[in-house]
Amino acid sequence: MTFISIEFLLFFAGIVFTYYLIPHKWRWILLLAASYSFYATLSGYFVLLLLTSTVFTYFTGILIEKQDTKQQKKRAMLVGICVLLFFLGWFKYFNFVNDSIRAISTYMNWNYAIPYQEIILPLAISFYTFQAVSYLVDISRGKQKAERHYGYFSIYFAFFPQLVAGPIERAKKLLPQFKVEQTLNYDNISYGMKRIAWGFFKKTLIADRLAPIVASVYDSPDPTGSQIVLATILFSVQLYADFSALSDIAIGCARMLGIKLTENFKQPHFATSIGDFWNRWHITLSTWLRDYIFMPLCKGKKKRSEIYVAIIITFLISGIWHGAAWTFVLWGLIHGFYRAFGDHTKHFRGKMATFIHLDQVPSLHKWLQIATTFLLVCFSRVFFRSDSVTAAFENAQHFLSPSSWNPSGIIGAFEMFSLLDLVIFSFFFIVMQLFHYIERKNTSTWNWLSQRPAVARFAVYVLIVVSVLVFGATGQGFVYGGF
Amino acid sequence: MKNIEKYRNAFMDALELEEEDVSEELALGETREWDSLGHMILISTMEDVFDVSIDAEWMTEFDSYKAGKELLNRLGVDFVNE
Image 1: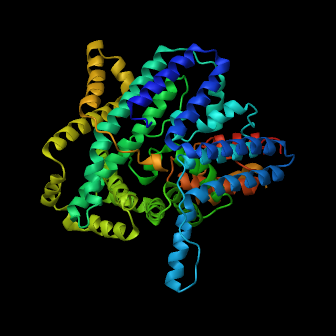
Image 2: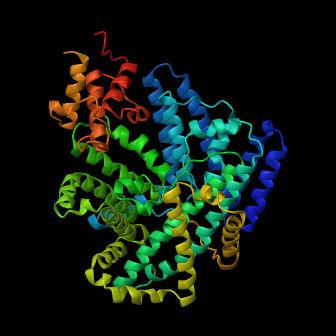
């Protein structure tokens, strides 16, 4: 049962109906049962692992709180985090490390005997492990009290709208919301339904329509340079539509239950720098990495070069978190390099903009920054999308080759679309951009829409729903669902 | 040396500012020296100079010369009765 299915919508409708029907004191049981049932349909075998991690984190939290000194709290926290990271490491990184050591051993003519292990990645383990780590760290720092109600704590761990792919929430924000009695509220129900519909729109009309087209190039043994350029740009659109759709559905579902989740995207492809991009893309992961990796790494650092090292390590961890493969490691390193290089050359670039009078035309300057940032992000996504390091470097070479950017070649590459697919995709892509444009001008498209006449408003809602039903493509899993 | 002097010197050291550049109006993001990375260096310097620990959530509070003094004051650094 994935988010994009009639089964899920029926399941969720049943949960919402029951949720507001039963007294508040029983709702945690309903949410917990729903969360475990939902997880079981996706990754049945690993419910036990989710349960084990929850029990372990629950008792470790209490143990940390009971320690007398800061030092003891820190020690208990580190032991707890090590155990959680052991679970994550075993399931997600064992074969990555094992294969890497074997490759080095073969190259160096060493004898290495540990064979490849058949280990299946438990769904959402990266997401709930990060939530668990932040919980333990916050208790140790005295910012969070250890939750004594096991039921509420378990929902924080396994809340089904955001379990699979976030947003990564902090206990401080989510736990109190579960405890407050939520009443049936028209605004919440209406807003939640709109966000879910918008998520379905982006997923089925943009992401899943692009997925096979992008795959046809990236899975091809000999793509042309222009095809790689176009497919990479389309992959960026696909990835955004796919992942932000997942967040929209999660936020919408939670809102219908009266719970407010953290926004995870703020139009990242309109970022004016790489730093700005990471303030807009997967915001809850970026802030998690900032608070629990980058800032501790920066402690005591008094030179920019030392901060650059902290940046690169943080992005390296971000890359490894995204996937157990060297392509993701390289992707993370590229972003670390972008960020450090961008900072180091900031003044020089500012002087250049002044020298060529670019700063006298702020809107042109801004759009050039947006285009440059987007292309830098696209280049990094060659590594994100490629299946191996060798393929990634070949594709990167294609992407950087000036001949690949020949306009006639790019136009020719559009042959990867059928005419009908191109028309359908273009139409819905423009609709999405219009939505973004209104958002940039009005901060909330939904609020802007609510001020329009009822006929116009309902025409938009009908367009969204009918488009999904008539033109929506399904069958592709969520890209971030695999992390 | 008085705390207020230590505070001003910390700004000059961390952000490589001249004495005349350090004023009550100084704010995060409004000068090229006090950018996001400069902020991390400034926080580390303040921690060392005043022997305090500035948590991640307080770092965002430290967004101006004045706000920094208020935050350090809450952490036990006295700028008035020293």
